Image (cartoon, rainbow, N blue to C red; front, side):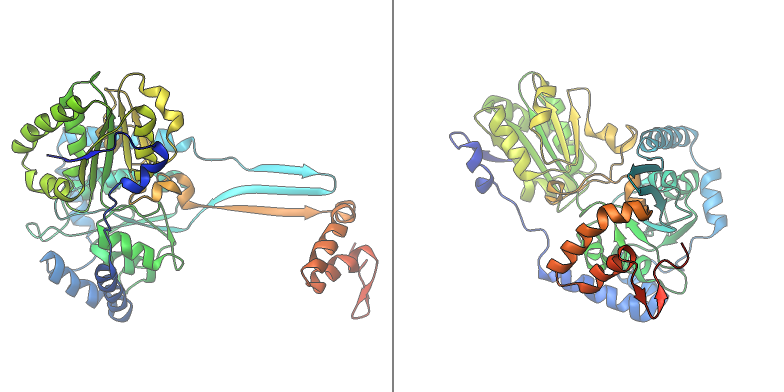
Amino acid sequence: MLNRIDLRGISPDAISAKLPRPEIAGEGPRSVVRDIIAQVRANGDEALVELSRRFDGVDRCVAVSETEIQSAVDQLDPAVREALEVAISQVELFHRHQLRPPHQVVGPGLQIEAYQRPVRRAGLYVPGGRAEYPSTVVMTAVPARVAGVEQVILCVPASKDLNGVAPTVLAAARLAGVNEIYAVGGAQAIAAMAYGTDSIAPVDVIAGPGNIYVALAKQEVSGDVGVAAAFAGPSEVVVVADGSVDPVYAAVDVLVQAEHGPDGMAWLVTWEPEFADAVCVAGESIVAGSPRAAEIRSTLETAGFAAVVDDRKAAMAVVNAVAPEHLQLMCREPRSLVDDVHNAGAIFCGPWSPASVGDYVAGPSHVLPTNGSARFSSALTVGDFTKDHHVITLDRDGLERLGPHVVALAEVEGLTTHAESVRLRLDGGTLNGQSSEAGQ
């Protein structure tokens, strides 16, 4: 089931160089994405309709009507609605703790006021095609709403079978407070949200996971629009486990993320070779009975690995080198390993904490960094939808205290006018014949 890698006898410091890190994005996909973005910028809605027809096999208008949305809500299965409402409540509860109240920093003659302000308009992307993801609607829309974003829009590919958006996604969007929904996916949706079309007004921030083309498109538009959570692309997991847990648990959790389909990554890391064998046997049985066996096998064939290491320290070296989106610690005393984890999007601790709970109802957003970007980025948070503002106010005493340091540093940098802006005030100089004391 998994490609075996024997890392025994290798120093933890040397493990990183021995690990396979498949390149998931060459120049080919980047060229395709750039061409799609150029088409959308040039032809707007016309390009969106044509690209949806070409890639998704659907032929419909971009905007989803209020009638279509309300119908989805009215027909929603009660059990699914209850699950969505629980998820929304949990995600809101967690993210409200990320809000920071305004605060002041006061020194002699100096006052700094700091506060958060939400962006005005946020664009969310929810994948489609192989599956429908109402959970991703919740995990992106709720943090945006908690942040105070005024307008939240959603782009999601239309289903070929429905010639429209999956009803559960539409219902989730309504329950989570999304304002506008557009049946468009792929790199073209990212371009539309970044630059706007006749139907879709441009946004300030784009958030949400997607396939390699969506992830690359977000990279391409970054700088013209805010992009939340670094490279939220195909799904990844590393399961660190030993014989203290049932191998079936470890196997199914390796497979959970693999069932999203190609370009993902699924690892087992253990210091017990016999346990790795047992996990692979259990995994084969699970895959054989899965309706998504093809998607699982496509991931495991190129990026499914069972790494056997010497000890727990070496296991953590593998984890930090891979920097996975999801990390599960399923071994004796799992909590003792947490301090050694430096690079991971989300950590799930113990045998009763499968990553699937984090995907749906735990509370933190399941939009997480992939492709190694957990080395420098984190899960989607309220902060991705806000900006930090500060207001600086000095009186004369404050300027007299700090101004000479401004002068000294400005002169070192050769920025004489910066220095003069302070001197004029402190020395009582004049500018255009007007005393700098005027207006005091």
